[in-house]
Length: 80
Image (cartoon, rainbow, N blue to C red):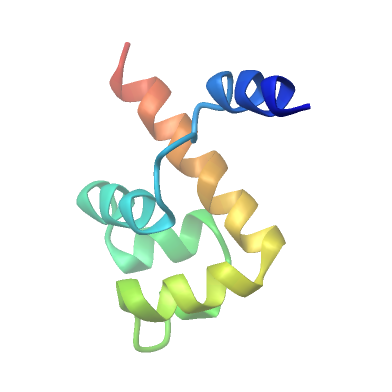
């Protein structure tokens, strides 16, 4: 079973990338307003900060999934 998990993680493009690193990379590309336009999340509009976003995203799976998708799409675009 351990080998399967290792193999799955090796194929995961987000393996070893922290949520904080994802948010910092997105903030280099987008303003808070732009992030809120991409993903309708209040923590991007009301008193936005990396820390408040991390707190919300760590407890809200649907929002974290959207942020991770945006990050992956941004990385894919930047690598072309």
